[in-house]
Image (cartoon, rainbow, N blue to C red; front, side, top):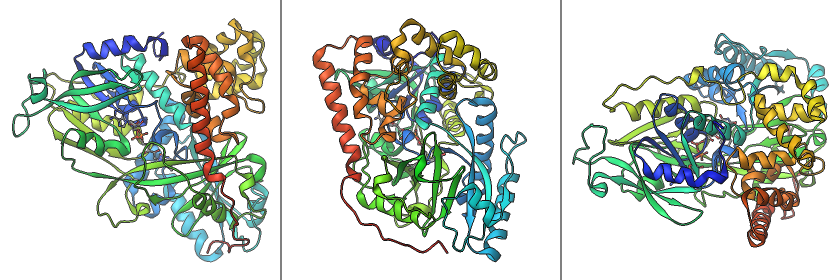
Length: 574
Ligand SMILES: Cc1cc2nc3c(=O)[nH]c(=O)nc-3n(C[C@H](O)[C@H](O)[C@H](O)COP(=O)(O)OP(=O)(O)OC[C@H]3O[C@@H](n4cnc5c(N)ncnc54)[C@H](O)[C@@H]3O)c2cc1C
């Protein structure tokens, strides 16, 4: 089936990659790498992608999950970034992924009547004006203090002078990344997860110049592929490609260092932490954004929960699993409680996660909040291009730019990027399938709410998940009581979405890692049983998978363990 990432057929992908040669080998399966694979494959190129862990296992599953222009960047004068991001937002909402990217309102409370309303209002006029012609979200509106409290009774009423409401959009970042990778696969890209690029092959290593006919670097050198390790077996092999495109986020400098290639930029890591609370903890029917001393704090509606964050601090520790600390948790709670009438406590927090922003650094002393979110493309040697920085929202432009740089030296003409015209899997026919929701519910004998849940995650591919339920009614049961995820979604993650381990399912295909108080540990045995059945796991493997997930879940809950006393009443933001 085109675009199915089938875990069972991973060995075929290994064979095809090793057989090469490719036109483009992408290193990194976050949103940038998945986007680059799609961009290159849809230009008719032979493409492979290697990801050392799982798709979106890095930053691309740990963001604020907003597809936005970024009001804050407007204030910093980053007009180009905001304009581009808003146009991308509208393209994704209307054409490329309307099933995954949904408009969301944000309320901006005002506390200084005379100064703040004209200032924020003028910013929002510019923000709205920067959209393209599509305008899929309403314009901003002014609210009185009473109007603000009607939308968000959770706000402290003291000194509240009114509010503005504006619109952005939100997405399940990991699901979106997997969908882009699947769409790339549907255009012929070979996607291989749990496979690391250990080092780059250079002419001296390979003995032969690359086959694209272009000349070498100053000393005749060029990159001709990469040495890959299959992380499931430890086996190493070479993949030959005319161009290697590095989309390794905060790991970019490690890829360069492993091959002794000097980089034109340095990636600085900035840690951002989010908390997840039940929806009932904060009484509001809209998202909210409030100012903090250093930046802004978002309250983002997330199904039956809120995501609250974020922080922005330099990070030099482990890149694979950046840790949220008790102080991060308390910082967010304290910042939130400045505006909430009923303070949040640690008991309200069901999940916490941390991610690393790959910021392209200038001087080391620049605070990370001030570093630009624009991206930088680097071509340090013939046969090698890389990209860093940027935002999830602008991934399509980043992908286009780095592929343009990579193919600039090809001896034959390569078509321009077509991704602006290319809906992702699940977008094609989505309005018609959505209109048929009631009929689907009757045909498959499932509640309408189940079909609506699936539509927002699989779009027009919803029928593929429902077919699994038709074949095995037990897969129509919830994965975990109190959550909408079905057991069929676990099976689908294995047969169509490339999940290889229990962690891949619970952390990224469904989001129980961040949504349930035990980080999804209670669902691990059920996930293991379904995956094990499909992948032929024996008893030992099943025990190992559950144990590994339990350890992973426990590590993720650590920041919530240490007892803490929060300051009681903090002043409302000035
Ligand atoms: C806290 C936070 C909040 C954010 N909020 C938003 C937001 O709301 N909206 C927005 O637009 N942006 C947001 N961003 C930014 C956005 O999330 C990132 O810009 C984006 O996810 C980066 O994607 P990437 O693919 O470049 O990196 P990653 O997702 O980190 O992907 C890099 C991948 O490369 C793999 N890799 C590394 N080395 C190798 C190797 N040697 N071989 C094979 N694979 C390798 C890694 O395993 C990883 O999966 C946020 C970021 C953070 C941290």
